[in-house]
Every structure is written in structure tokens, then in C-alpha cells.
Image 1: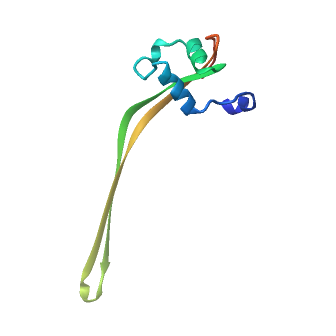
Image 2 (image 1 turned 45 degrees about the vertical axis):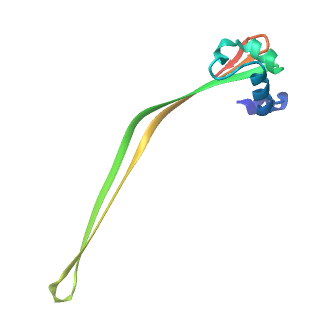
Image 3 (image 1 turned 30 degrees about the vertical axis):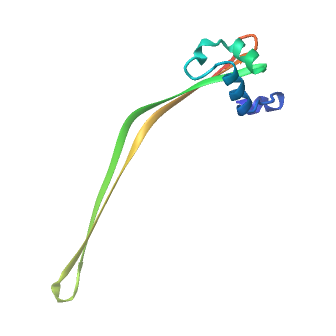
Length: 111
């Protein structure tokens, strides 16, 4: 989605963003107290992207298999080969929400 507008945007280096946030006393515990327009002004940007990623565990799927082969050898002797395998996979539902706000605090994209 951002690639569509890539020639119009200049992205701020994450270390600059982190430093400005620290200088203004922002951290993961209080960032929700800042509105998007304030964040743009503090960071010196025209737009700010905000988002959330939710990962929900849904289930585990187990797979197993057993194989046995018997061969007859000379003198009426039998040789048996047995093999077994199993695996499991955890399944998750992932949801990503992205919003872009202007420095005026207007939500211009919500995906």
C-alpha cells in the first residue's frame, strides 16, 4: 500500500523517531495518551503511521503415520521393518490494522 505512494514520502529513520520520543517522555506505557496530531508535531512529520498486530492461537493439528514392511528371506525367515513419524503444527489467526494520520490529526487511511 505504501509502495503506491513511495515517491511522495520520505521516511524518517527509526532511530530519529525513537530519540525524539524519548526526549518527549514517550514510552510504551504512555504513548496512548498522545493524539496523532501531537505525535506528528513532536516527531516533525507531516504524517504518522500507527498500527496493531493481533495474533490469536486457534488450534494445534497433529499428524502421525505408521508403516510396516515384511520381506521373506531364504529359509522361510521373515524380516519386518517398521517406521513411524509424527508432527504437529500450531495454527494462528493474525490480523494487522494500519492507520495513517496527517499532522492535522485526520485519519487519511485505515486498512
